[in-house]
Length: 117
Image (cartoon, rainbow, N blue to C red):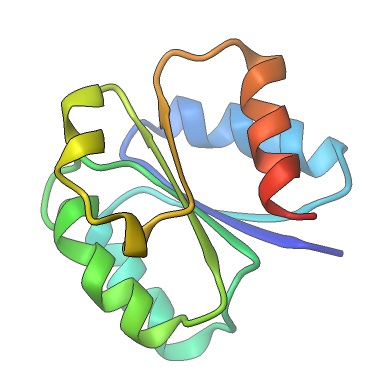
């Protein structure tokens, strides 16, 4: 079973997206801040896919990308952000996909499934 980690400060979004992905037979974990992600690194295995928001309180997803890629070398990274202007600021070597919020659910699921093939 493929493992997906969702990190977004929008708790409602992480709950809903987590439930939808769980119903699609993915193992899903959710975190609600960049600081939680830093703690998560210590005791948890690398996910197959990290879905990461960019603008969050505490440590932003943008700030965490270098750390993520230095610790997790195999995980795919999908940025899911309401700030499309960051798409051009993020070095492409750090991410596998950039998806702007809001996105129709079917398109979002197709992107996720494509990354996990």
